[in-house]
Length: 80
Image (tube, rainbow, N blue to C red; front, side, top):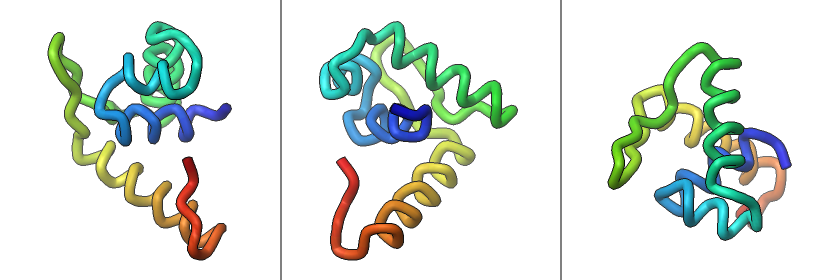
């Protein structure tokens, strides 16, 4: 599973724990992979607090680009 899929799972599930459960992995693994993606892109994608996450402007932009790519790659299908 690539970092973009993991990032989108966090966005869709609105949290690291729920994304980890959906992906059948650990919260720590999901967090590490998102952090690696942020470092590779040189920008923060998620604003984290102890209770929730919020997408940054860059995070919103990336999530929209991924969603558009996934829907254009598979017309009529949404990637899960």
